[in-house]
Length: 115
Length: 113
Image 1 (cartoon, each protein chain N blue to C red):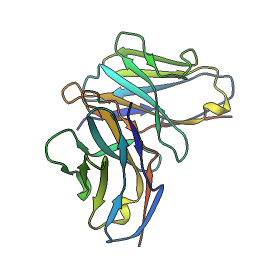
Image 2 (image 1 turned 30 degrees about the horizontal axis):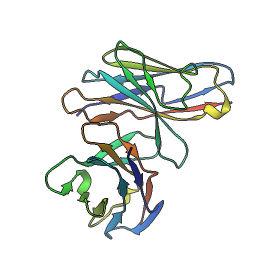
Image 3 (image 1 turned 120 degrees about the vertical axis):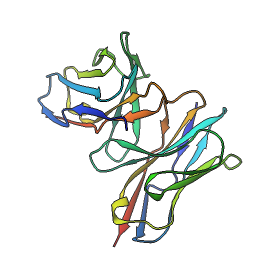
Image 4 (image 1 turned 135 degrees about the vertical axis):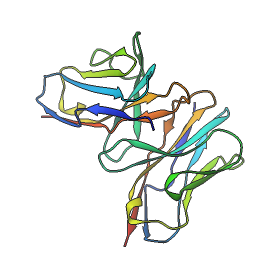
């Protein structure tokens, strides 16, 4: 089946620094990838849709200058949390859309802790 | 726009007992419906999906769900649960033609020995 990886799985950073999270589709090409944020005991909230070679589309209320998304190739999308603050601490999950079935395949998630 | 209501935040059950996790949705257009499972500190795994056709959908790990259009429901069932089924379960809906789902708040299934 389609596999999506994320790196790192966990990251702790100091307030004010930036953190980059990678999302890769390992055995298929993904024109479209999605980034979600999940708070403890809550559902997934779509942050943005990332299309290869073009600017990401952000959901209402998501700061595009704070959450930078780059989809440079058909197998890689990155999310950079800039000038992180403790309130950015969360579980970030990416998904990649299959070319043939359009199904979303989810990565294992990245737990970000900002101290 | 679509929305999903998962009526139970937590469902405790004993091993080998049957379980039903409830899901209701709201939409002004035709929908696709999904159930995902999330194990601790992991991403989501698709259990099953309804796109069209038979309203009874069978998924992985012995789970099944039934689409009831009149009741706008898509409840998830398993006749006999295992300890390993302990996880968070998310119901999701998208408009037909869109594969970007809107998720419910999740139901925590806790299977006791």
